[in-house]
Length: 119
Image 1 (tube, rainbow, N blue to C red):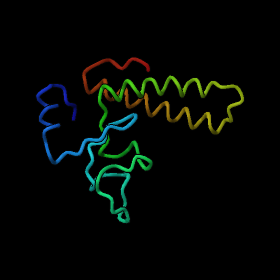
Image 2 (tube, rainbow, N blue to C red):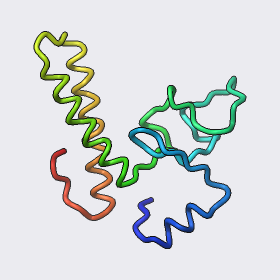
Image 3 (cartoon, rainbow, N blue to C red):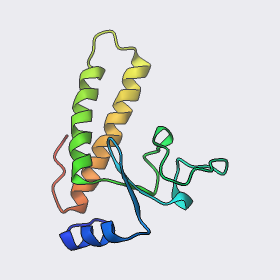
């Protein structure tokens, strides 16, 4: 779902059932039942386990703020990937992450009805 109006934002933020947590590159609308970062052995229900966060999680949401940070992160990753002497396996891993982030930006822009310019 894409939230496009201030009314929708206020409704979401005012919903006591929603646990909204802002991370470095994404926002988590935390629901334990659908959290990819939680398992049956984790008794902590207070919020996401950021170190175990997965981009495929159903709780992931991206705000305009997140997209700005992702765009900055992609620029940094591109510089890293272009570093001389970077081992190929690490360079490939970085390229994979860049592609994931670019898809996230494109999906976000498409949800807002914007063209998907390259990051």
